[in-house]
Amino acid sequence: MENSKDSQKLNWGTKKEWQTIVLLIFLIGFLVHIPTLFKLDSESYFIRNIGLILFLPLTLYLIWYQKAELKQTIIPLLIISLGTAYLNGLDGDENHPPFFLSCVHMIVLFWGAYAFTSLRKKWSSNASRVSFLRQSGDHLLLIGLIILGGVLFSLLAVGLFALIGFEFSAFYFQH
Image (cartoon, rainbow, N blue to C red; front, top):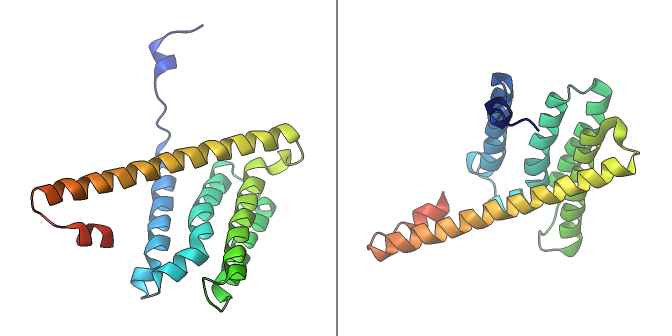
């Protein structure tokens, strides 16, 4: 067992990886701020496009990282594009159960497109699919913990500022 300083160093990635991640973060920021930029109803926008916001950057990163061939990128990107166009083209009430089910199932379909991109030629292997499910579960757990930490931080910040008489909760939750 090797116990040198080299084996204990943390790999921060290459400059190209960081540039790609920053570019994808800007893409996520743009997608999240579309309702503000174009004066859209934010509730309706996020219900329809949460799958796009979550899975498009992940899929694009995997396509870039794995240096995927064109034919392996067309199917997932086509699924995400057509699914997003379908959801945004649906007319109707967001509280209507069939619309809600369409949104939920579209997220599952986008997750499948992400899985297809992630597994590539190992799609038929049971061990690969189980490993992908385990990885997805780990990601969901981490996302849940990050969201919980953000909520707790927000509540703590608003409460502490209210304690000293500085009310900024309306500004804080608006932005």
